[in-house]
Length: 326
Image (tube, rainbow, N blue to C red; front, side, top):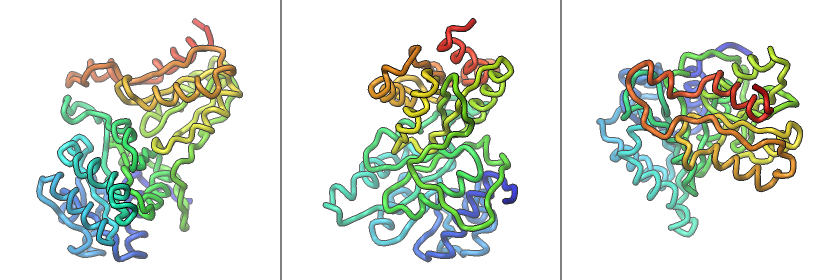
């Protein structure tokens, strides 16, 4: 094992796969000459050249469409969005193109493409650059959606995404690119659709994914100081969702809190809560609680950003609510 930054783990995943398969290429804004907006692709242009590390104009609809067409014709593109906020310009190519093509063609045209980049808030970026789109894309059949929380998972899951024959949405965070973590030296992949228990516990289950996992684990540490033993589950993939891991945990702890950076309506938290009450209702000792963003856009002022986003204190309060503690 060695310590890598999140961005370095992503770079290793792409570079290792590109060395094995000449059909893979990376395309997006500033990925080549500038070494990536967040330095994820640093050095890749020098190794792979201009035909495989391709700078694009500021035209997400255009280069997403080129990627879909390339995938239909036998290549395996990685399309980087500078932020998934900008992917809305390209969403027709992703939803009406990539996700539906295999079905519309009767299985004749698979679309092995990865769309990756940061999602959600990242400080004072204003309402048009702070939106979480995880649950939006997870709502679409034909896509797989991955939201890793640490460098080791990021590398293993991105390698799996690149090898997958279906279109994959791979969501990161601007605030995590500098995060460091232990990453194995040798070849490894992490299967898509398998959650991981990050901390075992007996009193309550906390479920989250992506950068919110840091908040979930901090909250679990705070709860431990009060002798509350929380089990923390990282979904890692939100389409498909590993419902079974959550349900088995709830059957043990009898209480569930779901943490997500998303608006509450139509969120992953809402979906997981529905599934648990449907399949494990008799094991619940309290109503399920969600900790999400408020049902409003994220404003610019730092005081409003702090009030808006989930934090450990909000998770601790939700846990105490399901345990009927003050």
